[in-house]
Length: 111
Length: 115
Image 1 (spheres, one colour):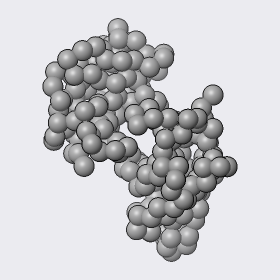
Image 2 (cartoon, one colour):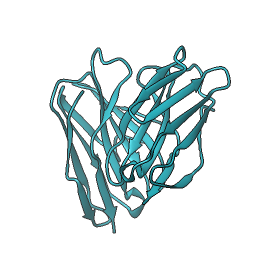
Image 3 (cartoon, helix red, strand yellow):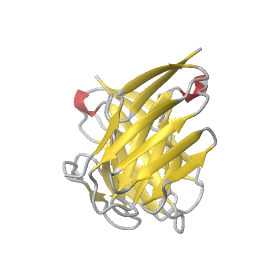
């Protein structure tokens, strides 16, 4: 069964600190992997998209990595800000349209 | 990119009634989708809204419960019929652009509470 698992389930960090979120998947065939940020009460917003040939992609303070061999991805947030408090969802695509969503990591950044 | 709006943004409804959610996109899009996000859960695809034909439903979702319309390339509606408290969720519309590669954009969601 195609699955996307994320860890930790929730995370609390202090403003200015770095953190790394993990994503493991068993989706096959693999097309691409995305990280979304979802603020409370809002729709998800795309942070990065990576195909199997890409190892890393950055978007400002967000850097995603992908190891297609081990089927693992991580999202690293540098110098966290209060506005980074949100749920971060790892999404893996079997093809260009069908998405499989992880359950997300709830990040809270405190001053 | 695409700008997506949904109406209503939230609603509280009585058991047994129906609610129609609207999704409007600022440009013509190839694909439109409807998702459900139950409290504390991730997103689950309900169906793909097809322009000019019946929607394609995922396993566990049926047309009688979630009728969908898509009269053109910029607009779609999802109706939640004969609601029960178990239907309390956030319902999200998303779109994929022609030539947009793998990008999917999501609307702000409609938060539905059924009493």
